[in-house]
Length: 173
Image (cartoon, rainbow, N blue to C red; front, side, top):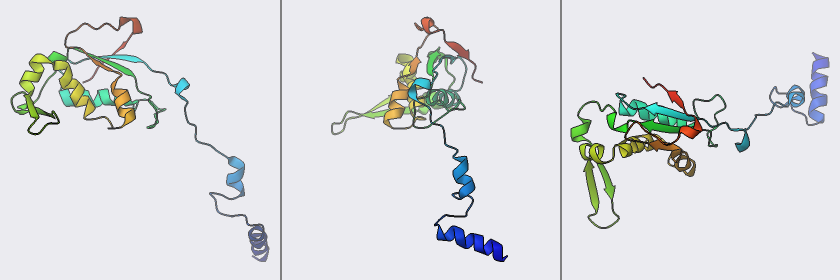
């Protein structure tokens, strides 16, 4: 016991800590956390067919792909997500009474300038905006979130002009 006490006193005289987190053993290990660089990020192109898929379920999966949370190297401060192409947006499944009761609100910035658009009208005129708004609701409202939203492309029909990127088809159930 005296020898251990003497060794501890010697360490304290040199102002070294003896705890496990910053002691001599921890200083020898020097394990550093790896942080990816923007040039090391591999982005893919994914195609999602919206036919018959519930809107919310599809939007959460698309938001996951856009942020890159499906990758084991995910870092929340980097744009690691993939480019997502959504086709057949007009055939997305809406559960419950959303088609009749849901209303999209926006404001012009002028007094009394609140505008309301029913979902039925939005699905008839701009079905791509329904999916875009649903995905945006699940993304972070930051500069990075806005940049990641630019990687989303939504088309009402089955055609898209991104065949040159050789997109992979993703099944969402």
